[in-house]
Image 1 (cartoon, rainbow, N blue to C red):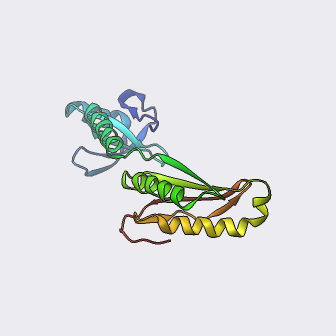
Image 2 (cartoon, rainbow, N blue to C red; image 1 turned 135 degrees about the horizontal axis):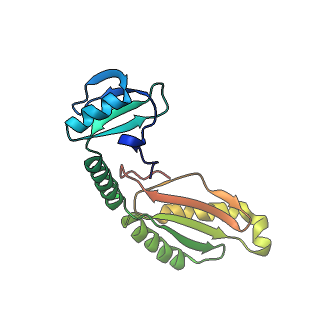
Image 3 (cartoon, rainbow, N blue to C red; image 1 turned 120 degrees about the vertical axis):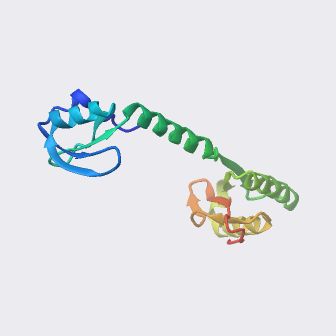
Length: 175
């Protein structure tokens, strides 16, 4: 949430640039006169541009403005889908049946709109064969039938290979 605006008597500067409630620029005027104009209209004087000289003040219904802003933020929050990062671990020695089973889980996660982190773990001497591990990861990615894209190419980690994929919005399979 941003810093609240200064309203009415909180504005301590002598002169402000005023915009009325219709959006028309009234130009520079004394803060006292701008406050009087706002009170005559039954509205508030709100400092919207404090960083310029002289500051910009707008005549508006401040309570209504705050209410609408909160509603917009609430709507945006509701629209924002909870996107979780799911993790699937695959071992160097994992068999084909288990790979297909894990690929079906990845497909479900992608259908639900989640991002999926796939980790191919290498243990002990398997780390010396990391190029074979990378090939196995590429093979596993090809078994995923749901259209997806990779955020970044697979990365080498101390424990093996890691790649993060997400559902492709254009419904094209880009591996």
